[in-house]
Image 1 (tube, rainbow, N blue to C red):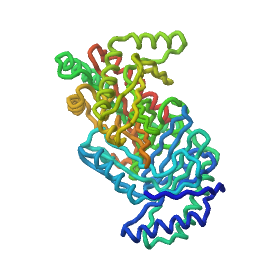
Image 2: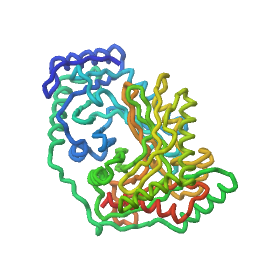
Image 3: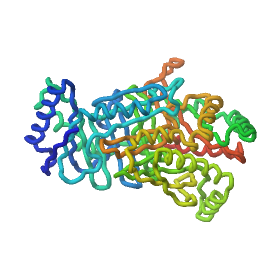
Image 4: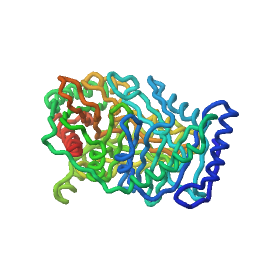
Length: 484
């Protein structure tokens, strides 16, 4: 990687310095005999990435959106300067190789000498739950470096352009297009929001959750647990929703971020009309300045309507032997897997309560310093899937999930996130999620639009089929409201 910087402070980057940077990048392309990537970072006025997504993005583009409203942080990636789709069990290693390969031919230019949040190239990655999928419309691993990226952290907002530079490209034209996009994104991010909700009459619940079938699976799983075949399994269910009108992805994301400010609001789009979105409470890993943060999140209870009722639910959750055991499975798994990578995980001795708008969880945050040269995707590969979304032992639980679940999980409960050129990253677990198809269905020639909503529950000794069903219905209802 090569670096250049500018101290220019106007809204648009200094033309002469940026042109010289691109000339150097093009000369490297000639000498190396291959295309180079010019990654250009510019500080812009604060914009709403979700509004930018609504105005700028096109269905045929890869897209990724991730927002943490509580932490005043959001990142949006649109279109692909370069991309790769990988299949097979070695997908995490292949994804890491893809990132290394492209970074070797990436030149980095930053507008300010001061440090900007989210500056420089970021690679966006999403993986399916299973390495080998049955009917997923997403590849086992998708990696892309966006053409356009806009992100903010608190009051700092950064625009990043990743441009292909080869010997034949006209640098003056390239610069003009860059300036136009900076102006367009700055303008679009300040437009009045036109987000509106659809109404119930446009929806038909085509396939509701099969309550008896799910409870039967729980009973069967409990028998296997009692026979010591495995200790825990996470069983998911899905409902399919049909609409006569297209689902509005941006409206749904806006609904989710307003309803669930404590969650990660996310959307991954494959450029073929499928959008996977949701509001996940679960971070897989976050790395910033060599500090790794992850979460053990397992064990659930509803929120109360009154403060006293809410506190009672929380106390029961903290005192439940069954919920504590489920939580301990996840904590032990994560700490063991991190230790196997040579890391030293640190955490408090007792779980806390993570209170979300409609549910509360047992939660243990875990930290570790990255003293060794461990790549973020090595950690993702080591942790996915955790017992919070698969079970214990992992391999047996995954085999049993295939047996009990009648649908392909696709991106459900899988890692989604980004990695920057310095090794910082943010990956979440894609739970409390929905797969929205923007293409009209040709089934029965009705030209309807479909969405599949996912939710799961952890089954351990002492689980009650009726309570697990109620937990799943609670999670699915929260998603359904966001679509409406």
